Length: 313
Ligand SMILES: Cc1cc2nc3c(=O)[nH]c(=O)nc-3n(C[C@H](O)[C@H](O)[C@H](O)COP(=O)(O)O)c2cc1C
Image 1 (tube, helix red, strand yellow):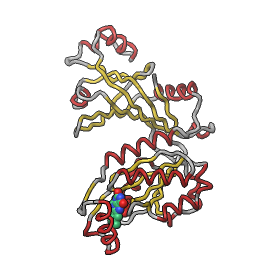
Image 2 (cartoon, rainbow, N blue to C red):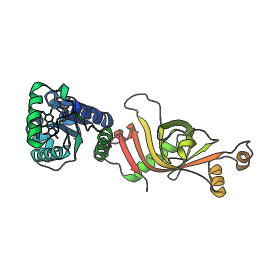
Image 3 (cartoon, rainbow, N blue to C red):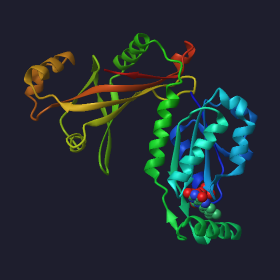
Image 4 (cartoon, rainbow, N blue to C red):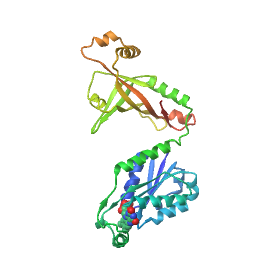
């Protein structure tokens, strides 16, 4: 699995908080300050470097880190972030960091926070000087935006996952379909606003679709408002060398036409009359699969990355 390293400096904790949240979304990951960096971290696949902006500059240990580690960073996937009160300052300094690296990389200027009563006396004095110089209002500010941080984390996750040694699509598709057809129970996750629900349910896979039979329930309160679903199919955990599980993203709809309904009931090996004679309606949820993330130790044994991603048309 691809590993992410986040190197940061922080005086009052905002940049540290960003580093921690990035590590949570991008795990397996480690976040540490420049002084905690160990040479063995050079084998991480994505390296993210972050700094707050103080008096128009990134913190010196961060620029030193970029300079000192330039050699191995050259061949790495690197991304940058800053935290600051002024997004312009943040972005400008990211461009300077890029220059040290000598290459264009993904970068994001994130909102920072300022709590005047937590500053040490040097920073209080510097801030007063700085605010006089550039007309910075001297007051508490909170521009930290969790959603912005998480969006950036997901963007980087996408970029990182594209580094995976990809299996030929036909071989991956074959493995995905074999796995789906050799299982019959999934966890269907639906949501609408604060309402989130995971439902264990039997499924049948056929040509890029999952078909689920249901007499009803709370999942429909979500599905009727939000057709985006996530589905998990997996085997019980045994050891780290025996992982097998997939996360499916798709769009759900209800099967409404009689012909399609009958075809699916027959495909499931059920008798249409028997279903129709039940004392209640039996509904079919059809999920068009858009993307499957498949974590499968078998792939590693074949020389590919343990995690493979299959996008459906
Ligand atoms: C002394 C001082 C100077 C600062 N200078 C700038 C600046 O030049 N530009 C800016 O956008 N933000 C500036 N800030 C705001 C910080 O970048 C922001 O508070 C950041 O989130 C702090 O991160 P940290 O908590 O990780 O240290 C300054 C803050 C202090 C205390």
